[in-house]
Amino acid sequence: MKVFHQHGHNFVWNLESFTKDGVGDGHILSPVNIESDKISQRMAKNIRQVSFFDPQFYLPNDAAKKLETYTFFPKNILSSFSTEDMIEQSHEIAHKCLAFQKDLNFKYSVIPTRYFSELPEDALEQLTTIFVEPFIIEHSRINDAPPLLLTVIVKPIQLENELLRSELITWITNYPEIKGVYLIFDNDFYTKQIKDPEYLSNQLIFIHYLRLNGLEVHVGYTNTEGYLLSIADPTSVTIGAYENLRSFGTTRLETRESGTQQGPTPRIYSGKLFQWIPNTSIPPLRRLVPDWQELFDDSPYKEYLLNTRLNFQRKEIYKHYFTVFTRQITELPSDLTKRTSFIIQKIKNALENFEKIKSYNVLLDSDSDGSHLPSWHNAISMFNAETSK
Image 1 (cartoon, rainbow, N blue to C red):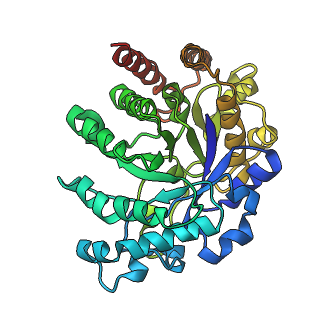
Image 2 (image 1 turned 135 degrees about the vertical axis):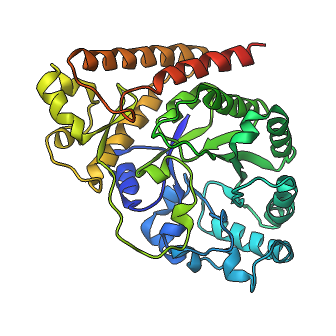
Image 3 (image 1 turned 45 degrees about the vertical axis):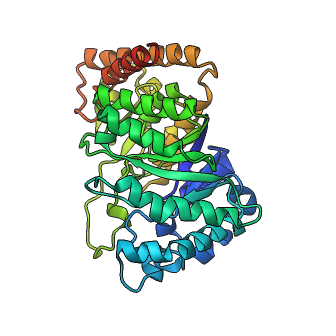
């Protein structure tokens, strides 16, 4: 299983981690954060050849930030936005978008999608007409175009409702021209870690059935649950710096007036806890828990992080996470049965570490206390029961 860097603000940290530290297998580009003519300048050809480009048509009527520099972005082509206009211009948009990806030597050609805040009954029909069919046709007209990935946003109801889930999987697998899926799970959880075992098990089931149909599955915008999702054998998961790159949302893709925003509390990733620990918890850990440093995995950035007053913009926070999480993925057994047992044991080890912390009268807040880990364990049990039928 591969690990891709999910680009966003300060994506240079991802590039540095990849080129200097050898972390990750490739990148998913974010055009909202880089001008079209700067890609070849910022990323060497050998990096682009192992990476892919997310066209980010999620809000096709809003060419926010750097998206305005891409001639194929719908808002830059259409005089007025409507579904009818999109259909009329769909082949022109598709050809320009695919030619752009081919000319820059990306690993895949990505078919975009749009975001629905509320899922209409004809959502799949709309996506087929506006994106899938035009892109497949135009792809066939471009010599040596990279293989196709279909961007798919999965709403919670499409995981919960078995009929809708089956309908979506059938739709995805109905196109032999598509090599794989760029899969994005949309959710409205307000906790920093997903604590719903049914939702997690349904994610596993969804990935599992796509893989059974012979498709590559590249899961975007993953947080630590990317480790859990490895049980279903996705082709890749992602590592992103800020929280809005570890959980999908459209806010960063919207044109908004700039204003002063309070930064989040700096957090340090612990692979031994599968948790982001706030820097405000470091002093009590230091004073009260023996060998507390052992709770944090080694990296070139560990010593700095544990001995510095941090702010959330310090690149070392994220480079440490990239390093540690990618190492965790590379250490997974290739055999899926062994991988499942391995992950279950790692979850138990993490829970024991949290009990150790508690035994020294250190309490962590609900976003840092490991309360997501029982849900991980239960999700695995539910997934195993479903797939062994």
